Structure formats: C-alpha cells, structure tokens
Image (cartoon, rainbow, N blue to C red; front, side, top):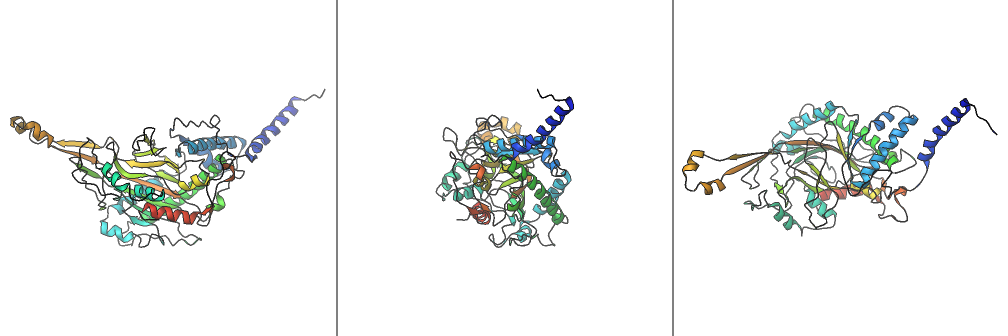
Length: 455
C-alpha cells in the first residue's frame, strides 16, 4: 500500500488546486444558454443587479492569483446572468474618480446654459461625415420604429397617446407626431481614429467653457479604460477561451461620449406647455398612463453603454408589450445608486451573442416626486363667490420638473470589425440567426434612424 506523508499530501493538494481553475477556464464549451441555477438567472424576476466589479479593476493592475481568478469568475457569472436576463446592471467600485465626473458635469452645464444660437455653432453640418457635436432634434421612438422596419403609420397613434394628461384630461395643445425628445446633447468621438474617423471637434473658443476640452478628454480616457475592463469580463461571461477576445475588435474603436441635458420643465394647467432653456421646441411627451417622457423608449445600438444617470427616472422594459397587449405597462425603475454607473447591452452585442444577451427597451421619465404647486387665487373671494366650485375647476396647477444631467459613453467596435454570432453562442438549439456585418455600416444605419431619418 502506498503511503503519503502529510507534507506530500499538502504538495499534491496545492498542485491540484493550481491547475483546476485553469482547466475549467480553458474548456472550449458552448455558452450555456439554459444554465439558470448556477448563474442565478430568473426570467420571471427581471431585477436589475448591482455588481461590485472591483475584482476586474484590481486584476487589470496586478497578475491574477488563484483567489483573484475565483473573484473574477464570480463577477463574470453575475454579468452573464444580468446580460442574459435583463440586459442592464449597475456597477460599483469601478475605479473612476468622482472629480472626473463632477468636473465634466460642471463644464457641460456651462455649455448647455449658453444661448441656443451659440450652441448651434457646435452642431455638425453632415451627420454622415461627423455624427457628433450639439443636437436637439433626436427622436428616439421614431428611430426605433424606422430601425424595426416600421414607417410613420403609428406616429399619429403615438401622438394621440401623448396628448393624454395625468388626470385624464384632453390636451389643449395637440402634440406633433415625431417631435424631438425634450432634451439636448453634446457628443465627441475618438481623438483620432486610424480607421478614418475625423478629428475630434469642440465648439469655437469664443463660446467654449474654459474647462470643456480638458474635462471631456479626461472622462473619455477614463471610460476607455473602464470599457476595456468590462469587455474582459464579457469574454469570461461568454465562456470564451481568451479573456482578450474583444481586444482586436475595439483597438480602433468608434466610441462616443455624450453629455445630456434635460432642461427644467414648467407644465401649467395640464396642457403640456413648458418653459426650458434648450429652445428645442420639443413636445412634453406623455404615455397612456400620464407618465411624462423625457427620452422616448428605445434600445441603444452599439455594443454597450456606460451611463452616469444623474438621478432617478431611467426605466427599462423587457418586452414591447405585456401579457394584455399593453405597451405602456411593465416598466422597471433602474436603481439610482450614488457614485455608480449603469451598464446596458446594445443591439450590436445582442446580434454578436446571437440573441443570447438582450438589448432592452428603456426610456427616461420625469420622477413622480416632481414638485407640484397650485395657485388657488383669493380664498376669501372664492368663499363669497356663488360659483366657487366652477372657479376651482379653472385653477392653475403647475408642475415643475427639475433639470437633469447625465453622461453616456457608447462603446462601439472598430469600423471594420466583423460582427457575426460568437461561436460559444451558436448551438444546435440556437443556430446562427444573423449574417456578418461590419460594425461601421451597422452603427451609421442605426445612428441615422435615431435622428429620425429614413434608412
């Protein structure tokens, strides 16, 4: 009988533990689409998880130990569950300093506070050649319809729905179909892309806030680092052999940084009228249930998005309609977590993963706790007036929706990257659903749709 000393057993155990994680990680098996037990996926409870990604951040700085690998795999499993189930998750311990965020928000505020005619000096004159700069005409819901192959037939119905008021009253000012969302944005792309993207442009010096260039540049670089770390986590979540599988597909990326300003709205007498500083002439959308829409329902069209939300109001919905055919119910509030980012999967990544990961419909609404005040006039006169009840019906109610700022970083692949179903996402029960397409062609078509232009 072979005998082992305690020291020999310890050495043998150490060897086994050192090779086991590597062996498990290197197995080239198909992505387990139906693994609902090991990854805590619950399709009946589409909650949006909050994931601590410190293991991803720390591992990028130092070589991985066995314990770090286990922590990384735990993070990857959480990402896998979130992307397969709801397509959204919140990340904490992401490595981005709060000063990088706050300084960008301040310089953006200074820009958006400029007169409209000055801001328009930063607008592009050609969406195809330079799809960045200032804009105030985005129509996300119409873009979604165009991209889905629908025309404008549903626009009138959408407009009619938007005319409904919080108290069920008819709107005295009809809403225009396909009016822009009540917001404005400013975007930049890569500093200089070897794939032919134009040089990054900023507003003319005469109108540009002093720190606008430095704050945007610093935030963009920070997001590039965070995106690379997340892509490594994605590769692990997709059971790919190489954690750097996405590296050569994003090394000449077309990522876009967009600051968003949702102006302060003052809505009087339920009429949908407003005052804001964007000069956009946009409508104050309302859904069937009287929810005030600030950004129409849409999906993002890149690989994924990293969002600093700037407060509550972001909602997601897994299905276009609920079981009763109602397209306006089933919305879930995304958690508003301090010093955190929201990550959501885009249409390109959904295509890349052969529909294993989901790109989820989302929108921005005015939070329910928006201030509301009522001007009841002279109370004493109302008591003396025999028609006091009638006068009360005509009282002016004012709802104030405060300003909201957010920052989105759209992670887009190289223009010449070929997007086709990832091998681990193709199985006998889930065969390839999409033909190969280049990322550049795909993104431009989606971008033009989001601007309300026919494809």
